[in-house]
Figure (cartoon, rainbow, N blue to C red):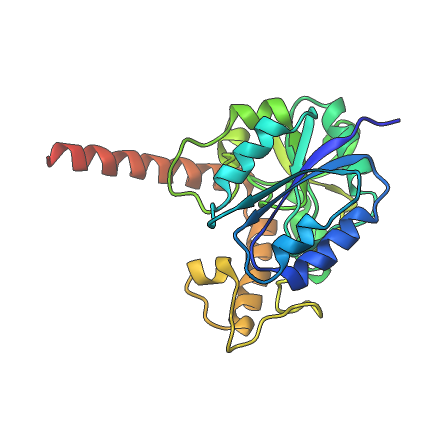
Length: 271
């Protein structure tokens, strides 16, 4: 029997999504252990997690305030045990068998960073556009990218610990996927794609957004003020990922780092 992987699910006031996400995840017979963290929900999400009685749910944590992503993820790394760890968001429906496909690849090839499911819509995928970034690794075809996003993925614990970001203003999981790639690890999506469904995409039939209650944290950070605009941004983001060459992504990442360093040096010089 395959060794179980360990998964983290963080929730915050998303009960309508959370219930569907958990139902889909827990219907998968793949071997895994699930660690749940609730960020001070007031909509019943915490109660949903507290009443889970599946034996694969081995850790539950209930924060008194929204702790973001860093604290829950570090708690997860300290508490979990598997050599392969991963994350599923509370608004994602994972495809059946995704763990059984990703975990063996990661255990077979030390050069993989994070491998994940495609969390855009199926119509956002175009293999013709993606072909320049498709490589062969560990006997599989991989659509490689500088990063793969923050949900429905697995990775080797040893690499993740190595590339934990230092404390700072981080909105997502504190893994420096960019630095992983620069250091030679492969982040990407095995082909054929594992299609996860993002319920918070306004194109999803499960989407709960309304113009009077626009709730996406990503959209708010980017100043997007309507579901229609957010759907357009998601589709455009997928296309950018498909067509932007990996070396161009790395150059842009390094340039941003250089500018950040130059800015810090200038600020120090002015003191």
